[in-house]
Each structure stands twice: as C-alpha cells, then as structure tokens.
Length: 374
Ligand SMILES: [Zn+2]
Image 1: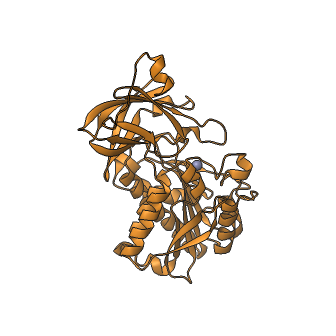
Image 2: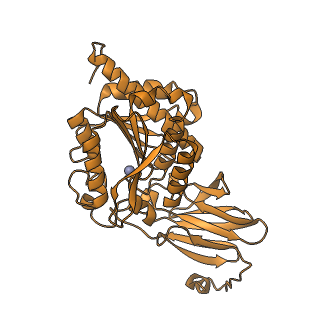
Image 3: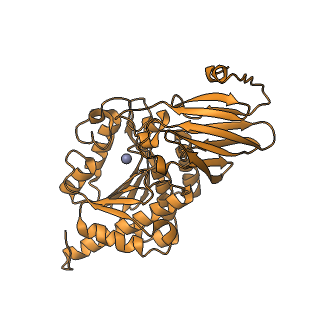
C-alpha cells in the first residue's frame, strides 16, 4: 500500500479487478494510488542534464472493468512554464485524444474517463524503442526501396538505426530525431518524412538524393526516458552541446557518420514547450525560403505561424560543423506538442523536408547566378 494512502487517512487496497496505473518508462516518475480512482504521479528528474520541460510521464492504465472516470495529478519536476501545461494525451488502441487538465502552481490535475482495457496516458505522447522497431519493420515490409543499417552501437549496446532510401551515388540528405531523446515529436516528424518519400510526388527526389532518416538517433536516451545519452555532464552526454568533443559512443558514431556523409542537407528535430513551432537556420536566405514555403501552406491552424531564428556560429555543435565544413543546408526545429496530435507533427515533418529541399535547390540555382543572400 502506498505511504500516501496512509497520510490521507484512506486505505487503498488494490485487487486484481481494480484499475491499475504504472509508468511505461522505468524510474521516470513515482506513482501513488491516492484513492479508489485517484493517483498522484511525481516526476523524478530535475537538473541541467534533464529537459525539465520534457520529463517523460507516460503511464499504462489497466482497466479490467467498464470505462470509468479517474483523476490523475502530475507534480512537475519544476514549475517555470505552468501556463503551457494544461493538457495531456490519451492513447487507446491506435486512437489519440488530448485531455484538458487544470494547472495549479506546481501540478496539473487531469480528470478523464479511463477506457475499458489497456490505454496509455501522459503529459505528451511518448515514442519508445518498440515504436521505432515496429515502424521500421512495417515500412520495410511495404517497400523494398527502404533499407536499414546501424551506424554504430550506443553505450548500452543498442544499434543506432538509419532508414535509407534513394540513389546511392547522390548527395546525402540527413534527418535526425531525438538527439534530445525526451523530445519525442521528432520521431513522428521522421515517420511523416519516411511515408512521404514513398509517394508519387517524391519519386523524382529519390533520383537526386540519398535520404538517411534517423527515427531515434539516441536510443539509450529513449529507452531510459531522459534527454541525454546518459545521466551526467552535458559536455559529455548532450548530443548537441557535446557534438564535437564527446567520447560517448552514440555521439562519436553520429559525428563520424555525418563527417563521412558530408550531407547536402541536414534537418534536426527538437521539441520545446511553447505553442509556436520553431525553425533555426544559419543562412538568412534558407530561412526566408523555408518560411515562404511553410507560411504559404494552407493549414493556418497548425503550421501557419513559425518562429524563425537566424542563428550565429554554434561552435562545437555538429550541425554548425556540417554547415561550415561541407556547406550543408541546415534546418533545426522545435515542434511543440501543445494539443497537437501525432498526425499533425508527422505533417510538419513533411513540410520541413519539402521546405528544406526548396531552400537548398534555390541555393544551388543561385550558385549559377540567381540572386541569393547568404
Ligand atoms: Zn532539443
């Protein structure tokens, strides 16, 4: 029986017929059963080595009876952005739904109906190692155009998988998700890009580029529900900040891979808490061309507004090194959840891929005399 139940003076005896909640990602939260249909979930990770905005809170609800209203209070690890924490996500079968929560200064309280059977609930959708395996298996079964390779092993021995498609002799186009493993949105963005590349519209692209898609470039971080490759100093285990200097096996493998591919284009997907999606670029014209594409898109509700940063030298970051060494056209994103569903994020993944291509092709044309501002 949880200690909290004693404190509240209530006795919560679980029987096999009761609804049960447990964390899908080990050690990320503490779950206390507070009342018959009431739980308190406390995030456990706090500190610079974690992304406290994306502390993984992903719970399996096991409901052996009929659908039942339940109450889940999530105590956040820190309290800086409570205004952006009023929603949660429920997954039942393949169906996703958002859930409204009430925020307090330190927590969000969710009251919703737990479906009969198993469902998953959390503060944002989680995408685990098994989801990656399942997607790779499915897409490779659907089309022989895709192949899978591993660019190396992580510190914990997991393969770092890359889905490849397109003409092998052509320039590389790399898409990365989960350098910050807790930022799950990127995996759906890459899924979207992978599906798009199988469509008719993308056929000419496969003759011009070889695409290297990483659904989870930091599998240890994904498996452990953390931001970095492992717990510890950011210089050593943050795939962005430690890009050029770290000796961590995952970071070394990506560094060597990028330096060998010398990509023509590189996209790196991230996710922050604010509502407007973010685009970071090193070249002003790339940013302007991408905006032209993205903001002319017809879906004003979701992708009509973008926050763009023209970023200066990011010394020590792999994306900057690719730009400065290989003239790579680089775009990095923050794709916030903020009520968006996974399908919307997948669509943004397609939009970003197409916008990056448009910007890159303009850059190449400009080399042949068209007006261009670097
Ligand atoms: Zn990030």
